[in-house]
Image (tube, rainbow, N blue to C red; front, side):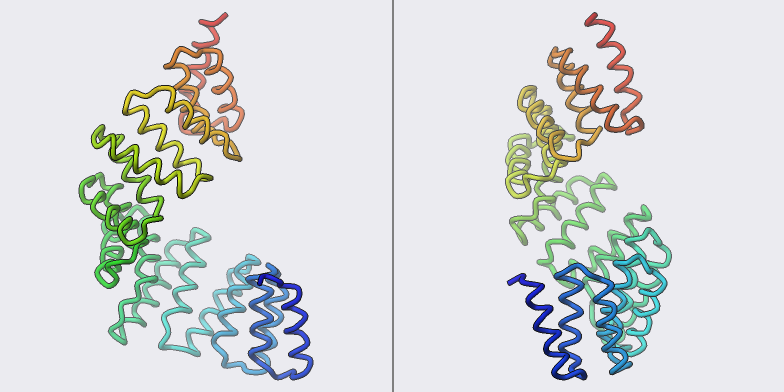
Length: 317
């Protein structure tokens, strides 16, 4: 019921009645970590479990998670490795370690841990789909698109209805500009999960930038926005679709929506400014381009924004 403070009081009462109740300590720790967002208190509770039962792999895993949230990467890594030794048949500890490293941009260390996780799974001839997806993400972050795609496709082969794996495979293919293959994966992702808004969005973006299937692109983009209305990137795609269809005012409206979602992003303000300039609305374009440069002085199109702004200011005097 999300009454975390009441839960804390109950778990504390339980451990006071039985100071060796491991389950109560673990529940208390999880309430701190996942409910109350108190990782230091969670770490203390997990340490109590380890004190009572040093060979409890779940407690080491929980302590690792609590330490990771606090930024103690070395401590978290040590606890994940301790859990892996205590439960050598489980791929989960090394998987979590790989994710921890990936979140901190330590891609080589992440890849090593994820390789170990998948190797453990292979010993039982099991296909560890979550590990494959996360290792694919590390390859993707390293711009090794072929290896990323291989991992995602292996995950899809093992679990053909896994919408996330299908989406990721489509993303890897899209980055390789293999448009038809990417589209097929995105359509399969939507079939597996009709609320997979990223797949709708990517389908719309491909269609708009290829200037084809523009009616479908508009339906896909609107569906993405409907599912996740607080995602500014989705309005950016919708604006791109309207622009491809020659619909200037709807494109401007969509970019306005993208730029209105906090915090305002310079790229969307810039694109709105360009669209206003193209529509002959110079004064509005000037104000928006100034806002873009105020939001960020060095975004990718900052130089063009300055050039356009200087030209517009000169012609509107």
